[in-house]
Amino acid sequence: MIRSACPPLLAALLVALPCSAADSGWPQFRGPQANGHSSARDVPLRWSAAEGVVWKVEVPGRGWSSPVHRDGKIYLTTAVVTDGGEESNPKADRSLRALCLDLATGRTLWDVEVFRQDGASAPDTIHQKNGHASPTPIIADDGRLYVHFGHQGTAALALADGARIWENRTLTYPPRHGNGGSPVLVDGRLIFSADAEQDPFIVALEAATGTIAWKRERPETEQKQKFGFATSAVFEIDGRRQVVSPGPGAVDAFAPADGSHLWRVTYEGYSNVPNPVMAHGLIFVTTSYDTPDMVAIDPRGATGDVTETHVRWTSDTKAPMTVSPIVIGDEIYWVTDQGGFVTCADARTGTVHWSERIGARGVSASPVHAGGHLYILDEQGKTHVLKPGKTLEKLAENDLGDRALATPAPIDGGLLVRTETALWRVGK
Image (cartoon, rainbow, N blue to C red):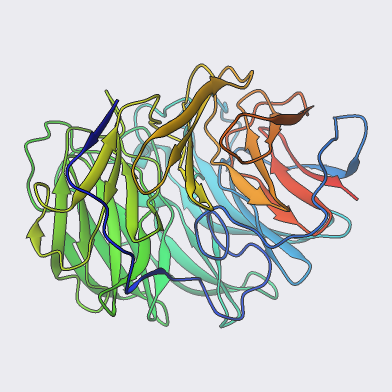
């Protein structure tokens, strides 16, 4: 069902900000522009666990952070149980680690411990779709890798050898179900939300030193559940950069310079996971649990609570709770967590073109677009390849046979796919 508040306006002065104008590779969650789009060439349509695999390497420990890569090197994080503990025990002691692998061979170039996690400081329960190393690292132009482990801390490492540049472990809070959203890097600030079980906040660290630049409590909402896991997004709106951050009960926009609150749209929803995307002058967010909606917001001129004035359309057609949407051309695509439904709608109006099953039982990874194709990795390790368009056209289904939740990273000639036990390079 689509609920339209008013006709869409012409897009102007609203752009998504890339990680850097000179970016190459896949340097952060969902790629250079954090929207799932890749310029990688010759990404294949077909592979399997037995064919079309360039290399497969076992990854120590467990983690659902997505792989990132640049200049022939891959970076990811993981959590390794120590002192004879059991992987299934959320309270076991763990070594929180960062790894660098060679893109050509999969060989480990360095593997360093970032933090030692005392099991007593870990959540009592970890959601089956979360873990101790879920946030995705950021490859920065200053020769640093920024890694984040939620309430366990944040650090900057040297890309060359993993040497620690700084760490910040001062932001303690009670997480729900484990770590979640990834940080964003803007104007020399590393910004992330801490939507904990109580007193949720958003914070900015100085990228140069790791010191706190500002910290802001989320404005109150009527939402009873206070936790969430979403990754924020950075957009330029009305000529200024804004950090758009979905949280429990509302999506808020903050100024990256000082954290001042700019505007918000309220809704019913919590445990937010999908990150916002922007196209055609609209920002698209999902309200997450328990009854998700896809919401399109025109943020131009927004100040304060703009729920009644700036929402252009809302759709509850198979809206996702976990998977981030993607806009390709004039259409927006979203994927349900369960049932394997993909929905294609007009991005400007929300009019649904189709909403159909693709053969996936569950999906957590966000879709990526490369070489004119839409790649959707499901939780069983199958990648479903679709041709974007106003009718469903499925081109291939590729099974690696291992549980998968992390978003794949396209490369020239292939994909990097992280499964529960391994990192795969498929393709050429």
